[in-house]
Image (cartoon, rainbow, N blue to C red):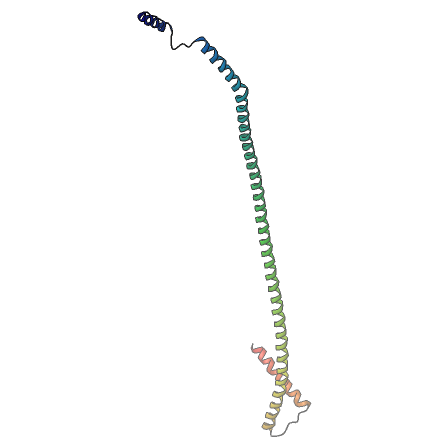
Length: 184
């Protein structure tokens, strides 16, 4: 009996393949697989697509915002450069205006100085001429009186200071001036 049992177990073992499961195992495994597949298909995949879409939108939105920020930065840079160029042009205009005003002030000061110098020179000339005239009058009177004194001493008589003696002195001085002018 033992022998027969062992033979029977040995023959049965040969007919059962351990790699091929029983039908009920395949059936229940298939049902569980399909149930899990449906759960994954209905619940997990849509959530995964939703998360991926949200991530895609976030990335595209970030890129779009970055492009908008870059465009705004470029526009701001353009405005800044335009303002900078405008400020430089304004500064150059102000410098040129200041240079022109400075030149005008210097020219005006030179003109005033020239006018003042001419006025001073004219006043000095008038003063010199007045002093010269006064000196000539004084000198004529003195030369006349000295000449009369000298003539009185030479002649030995006193010459009176009348019109005749004054005319004689004036004629003498006029002859002296004309001889000086002729010598020049």
